[in-house]
Length: 210
Image (cartoon, rainbow, N blue to C red):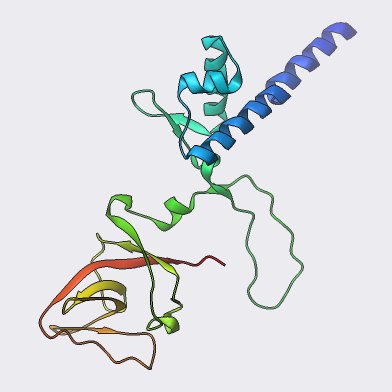
């Protein structure tokens, strides 16, 4: 095979398998836009963002983004972000015991914290914790708890409840037909509802920002 043919074949293969600099720059613009506005730009906004006048060129970029997995289309063709666009890379694990030689596992797995922590978004809300009655459960004042209204509590679950017209976060304890609430701090007594107990959800996760 002639040298010039081999070179042309090499360049074609390289361009097919490796994104060019323009593509990488435009992908970065898309990611920056999403992080700033928490939504994808419209097609018109994308054309302006990428400085493109050709709809065909814009379409090719969209197909490449879809192929790469950073966006997808729903059933009606609307563009949606994927975890690869808004998620965080999972680099591996860290040992919590004695120190060992660690090596970062540079994989491409990404994870959305929303998807990992929240099973039922429509029935989930956040609350900021006030007080120290649950410190022995690892829930400190100022923490945020993710509460799922759709989960039925069982003994030992941490719940948000209105007890005799006062809101609290406590362990849910059921013994026979009797239900009471237990703190995770020995300085606080158990709470036995006198007239009313309304359960507003089960705590699914705790979020703490350092």
